[in-house]
Image (tube, helix red, strand yellow):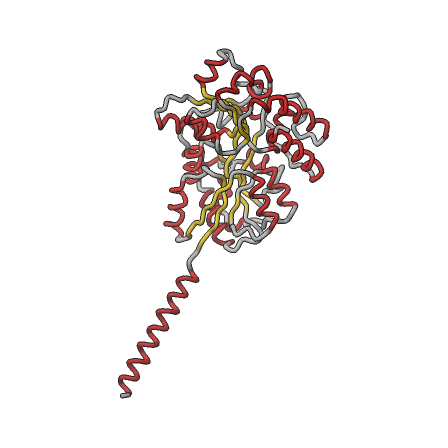
Length: 369
């Protein structure tokens, strides 16, 4: 073998090794953030724009109940970098040590957040140490205008009588009724209806609420936390106790389909739960820097406004309000007036003993046995 040929081969081998090493470097440098969020809860172009701007790939998975998320968090090794629990679950999960504190030095957009919402969030996360608010809303009454009017022209659509007064709710059994599969909301709403403290841990109060739901259980077709969106939009059901933005999404889907279904939403006059969905970083997150970049991006006013315009939910970002669709911001079922806001309750987390009582009561309600 000539020296020149040997040198050329050595150079080629070195170049090949460099290319392979470079390839491994590129693979190692690929950045990713793994997000676990509720279904139908973001404009997907936000994820695409985030990747275009930062080079960080988004793995985006969805769930439709807090219990599913909590099971993963408490088991550990979730595999996610950003998760979206509701406030009352967040509180219990903070106590269980499943989240890491936010590095606020990496979150310059925190200054955009809404102090009024931060105060309510602090009930769950004192000092706003572990989470940022993503969206907030109310749990209320969604209905098909024509189908309700046909069965009861003077139906009390702005009252929980629609679902909890047996002689009223029975009128709508034939056109389909859904209720959220969310005991930590539905049991307290029953208490509020009965004039009890929705934050009561008294087993007797829980029992009274459960009895009220059991009395109307034969009229309820299904307990589910996402199916009602399409069912309402398609005219397959006529009444739901659900989340505000989901019901407004159903309204918009019916409008887009031009299928003749007119859907409306009401905040019950008796008052109802104001819920807050939070973004937090699990303790076992692998991509912590990327998670902070994602949270900071979400807190940009125009980005979170785009998410709200898609979901029909209010968000906890004060600076975003100038970017919201005018009809959304002026819709008092989304951004309630002060009097309505004061009549909304924020649910505090149950202690473990009360949680077991609520879970047993809920199992009985859902099973109808």
